Length: 83
Image (cartoon, rainbow, N blue to C red; front, side, top):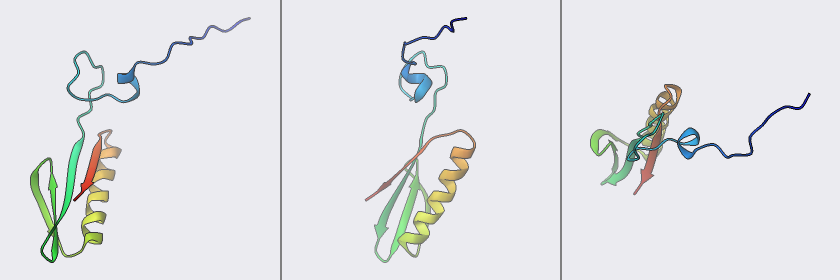
């Protein structure tokens, strides 16, 4: 017996749903982290709001990674930017 299959590519929002488009089934708005130097410390913002100050870039990186992992585990999306 022959199996039926479709050659049609999946819709973009099925692969990676994004914000700002209408008619999306599974809209995912990414949480945006930003790590920037502030004198001898590193400041982190989450969605443009103050999130914390860290003594080293490594400490800031690790904290953001842990937060992003929790977001990914819950099915969310996240981005990080270094300046």
